[in-house]
Image 1: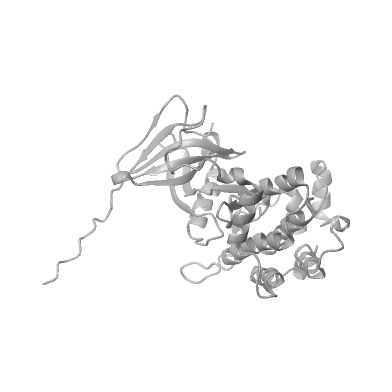
Image 2: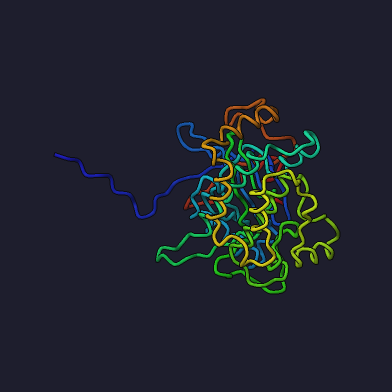
Length: 355
């Protein structure tokens, strides 16, 4: 005699509690916090919470972008893309989503370390490996389909060092799909979005774009990793916009002694005409991987971790058990309690909001 499986109710009531530990970052649209998700029987999971500025929650366009980012990334399950777990709204109307916490540093911080402290670029195979992992994440996103197998035509549009993270375990992850589009659904002629330093010409010209703008931007990131300088000088906005529209790349910065294969890969990524770039992001990833593994061996995530441990040991110092850390002075110290029947925030002197 077999027992019948338990019957789940139509709506499974469950309570989610998040204890905000500290503010991690703040931008023009909101803030990101480190938090602990707290469950029963002592369950704890470290997560990140991204909150939309309360003032922007009154603007339909910004809310739509924020909600779409959460919905879009929730269905992008890949080791090289930062995961999003939950989208919610507080009683005061503030939107937030819960996402994967990444312990490590951004590619921008990685670059700054090599520019200011080490004063030389990272080993070429290591740089190529990091970018190849992001290429794999992008290739996955670019080829996603909906439940009817219709291509989603996802374009990130903001691939840059600040949006590439490197974990202390050596994994490279792409984050911030905040201005990503699907089938041009949020494309607005007359509204320029993205970072000019890494922007493809057609994006700067505000033309319709596809995945090839991400290939251009990723190529710009690899160029900067190799040269420790961006593809074009950072000038005033108008000069930068003009340089981006013309697709200007300062090839004089590129070391002539480096292998021709890498220069060839970058030439294809950074071509002015999108038709001359890689026809798929998967093809780019394969070329990058062939360059580092053609001899039968090459860098792995363990190589990246070993490099970080040797060069940046501070990333691994004073590691604490998740949940044991006290909030930073002046940082948010709130417990957010959410379930299907009530929604409230309990605050200390700090605030869990992003304003």
